[in-house]
Length: 460
Image (tube, rainbow, N blue to C red; front, side, top):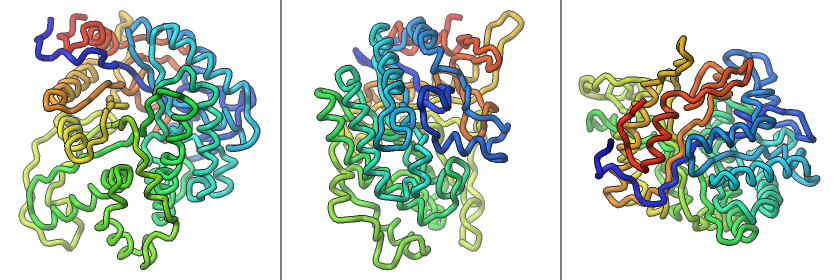
């Protein structure tokens, strides 16, 4: 049963998303080179449960089973990433044919199952050989990325019609180069700014290459965006909100859509000593034009909204008494659940930046509910989470937002980066010892949503 008003547009793409390092395993098989996540996870003390992605979900060997599972759930699209060192073990130069063949089989299998492949070129697993040269802090890595994009799209461009250059440049720079929680584990703010620029530059350079090698394809980029809400309008609160919105959102959106890096943020970074007084020296003539190369869509990864109370204003700022904020549910990752934030974000993107077509390329929640005595996985909290966020997306569509699809994160439980296997985001349970897959209640309900193309009442 469903209200007619909660029907989604015709040809709306319902899908699920994964990434190579989190599910593939086979970390050193068939000619694959070492990635920064291979090196990082093998370094003691970097991963919460001392695990690695060496096996993960063994998707490299079990992909036919996983495609059959997607087909059973009725997925219309599948977003996955390609392991760069599986294609170019040294990051550039010699091509590993076995790697190309693997992704070719995967794409063919998806198309045969009636599932549209959305290919992400970079989801954080940089070839270690390039990191040894300085990684994304170096302009040469952006050049190597274009070579990689060319090799991959020449091989798959006749079949893949949706390309995503990068997943979450913010996470790469902030988690990997600024606070060291992710690979390569560096902690240097000025370096992270160079990393962001080279990531965005490589995106802009790669877009025309992908279009040339994949005629008629749509090309975009995926950003993780974090709305900032103020619980009060105090001067101190407003100032912090501006700073955080600049760091999390505008620093990426503005240059991608022709507005250059935000002037207030550039001034802040210069004042903090993160940039030289004369401004960013790593930006060369023409770079910002390249970054703003028009794209066909923007991918949005949304997980939470930050609500700023006055008591989170930096020490020493003058502010009035603490502003009240209602208690909210948090996922097991510790992220507050705020579906309204997705609604506001989609509207902001459409009306303020006009990126064209939008996709929610990731949205989901970590809950550890496992099989009961009857084998059924009653992950009601995840089902509720998705139901509320789907409804928020529908409200945005009613406002005129051109949302064309929604990819749940994640298809399966997997290696959750520095958290190892301690967090479960999947709509499908994975027993890591046996590699058994069990669709959770959220997956069975999602199957109903896809079949009806509407927000349906669960009948499980």
